[in-house]
Length: 322
Image (cartoon, rainbow, N blue to C red; front, side):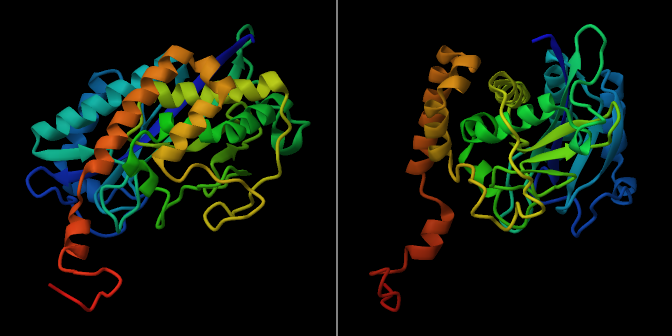
């Protein structure tokens, strides 16, 4: 199609004490660096990232206790996913050496927000380097190509889910409290939408796909996002109306994403266009692995099941205890 893909990925993670598996600090500290001053590991981690060639932009606390985000610059094509791969491995290894556990698990604590991967992307003209998503004469400064790309993500969102939310735990992240939508919608600077449009109306114009989990493979979350968007361009899809801040509360006019990994795997298998562009052999092997993992998950008896029901003789007659 004559495009280069410019992409950047943001990965949230929790920083935990290695022994206790509890956050290194409590409370709400979103978007501040105060807590970082008391954690020498942060300086050590940043030094290692810089030494490894990761071009850091900023770092701060996120919404959960001990939750962090470290941002780095975008890159063209596969280099963007390569950078994310190195970033995640460096974070894990450096933190472990210092006595911490950095976890990218989607929802490690039931009473705290989850960890997401936000995929930022735009398309550049291969010859001129011009941002193809930008059209100052278009609504919100978006070109028709950008709008079709967004709609492709929304239409193929269900099939994307196993690649961007690959574990059963990922689907707990979409429950409150959170800033991620289970609805297939978009909006300008709208954090409640699946696709957030960063409509700066200059060469920085791009979109942010917010549905991916932090535990997702950066290569697969990138592939799913780009594949769905390109399908939208290929089909010349028209962009649906924006969700306008309703992504967290629900709107019957907007279809939902799959609620479980079971539903997501069915959706991927049913999306023939997405399967074809991803590669049918890959999809077959990937879904088989995910189904095997899902079967193991279903066979596991959780602590919640034990503590909630093991004293009951008859669950309906809850007063009858053993």
